[in-house]
Length: 202
Ligand code: AMP
Image 1 (cartoon, rainbow, N blue to C red):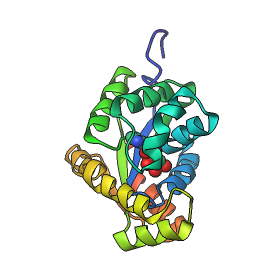
Image 2: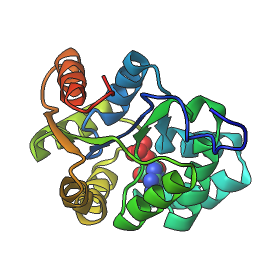
Image 3: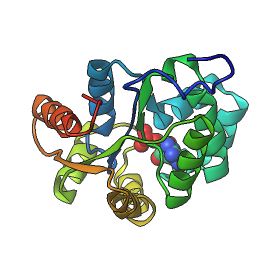
């Protein structure tokens, strides 16, 4: 690979993946395990933002209120955060995005930023979990920010803003669907199997 190429125009077999799923679908858990198995970094925007809040950074101060309310951080701000992260050297061989994109606008931003880096997505995996199971998991967990109304708001925002991405990615031939209402190990195996069908990924 010659000098002067963009960081993502790179390593053959690079895997650029998105994990899509409702809040409490097990997305974060699966992202970490699957990314490890594939040897790519799991990039969780939720973790990055929570880190910024915990660190009391400028970014953290900007996003805390909207996160506490279960709303979505502004698309333009998210694009900056994610573009910075994708430019890191560890993302050259690929990545598994967890929690981004979350709106159609973000999906377009994602496409643009990957294009600028000389790549594009290879696959999007959707974890399907029935609504009752999502609520049960959320309330059983008892995190301070998982009060019932915030849980419901997150789910509402998911249905309204994020679910349209399912059709968007299906239309691009990128979508793989997995039953997320199974044991952690079974879901991981299903995700990896779904990715086997994607050339050069698993
Ligand atoms: P998560 O851990 O992915 O559920 O993210 C926790 C919170 O961070 C979300 O409820 C949002 O407030 C915020 N957040 C994370 N990722 C995004 C994103 N792609 N767009 C907007 N807000 C986000």
